[in-house]
Length: 53
Image (cartoon, rainbow, N blue to C red; front, side, top):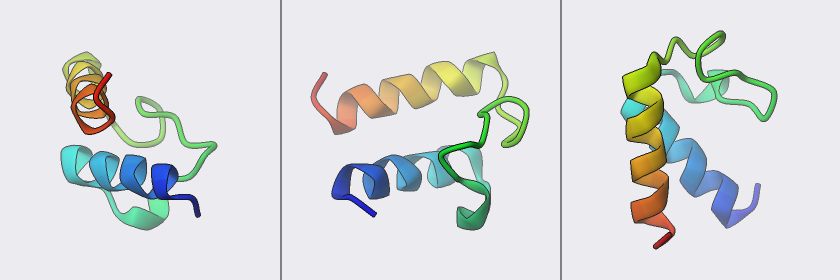
């Protein structure tokens, strides 16, 4: 797994409190990982912070 993918996965696991095995490239934040609209916004903010966007 690339460094970027590893960093993204860690953020998702930390923010959504899901098991690492559940986070796959095919997983939907809302349908598979249980994220709501606020979770999605918080994920975007964390991605922006992590990758200096």
